[in-house]
Length: 172
Picture 1 (cartoon, rainbow, N blue to C red):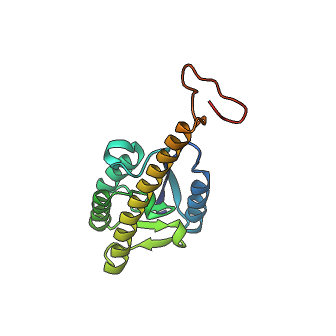
Picture 2: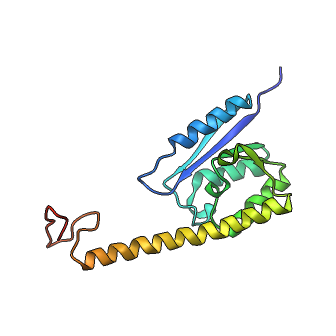
Picture 3: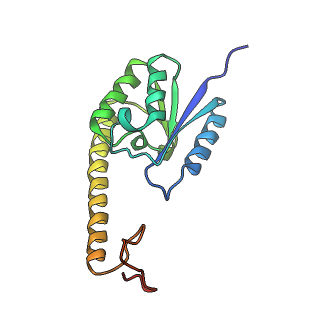
């Protein structure tokens, strides 16, 4: 009797008000379609804007198992869940190619990512670069809006600063 392959399902979301349940369910559904066992790797509430080697323990361990030859199939909702950094993308692409790794993207109809296809890889590189810049701009805008609201006397979020009280209409 041959041993069933394992689909390694990697899930991540970057903020506390999001969860990964939907990603997990989609990954499990795909593993069933592929007649594979599955293993969940969950880096919930971890940013993709920082190197995975420094901040995402689950993904770092997954890549270690790829290097050891234990992992052949990974499912993620979108390749951008793996990283938003170009340096990290190059490291991941290298591992994909060296280890004959199969990465399936849920948002792309569970199509397999092909880093050896020049056009697909170029598209992914541009998407990573643009996604990183867009995310950084969103963060900057959010911070700027909070500063502006605070300067106008509004309660922004979190604990009310010492010496202030919050009114019913969210003023300090």
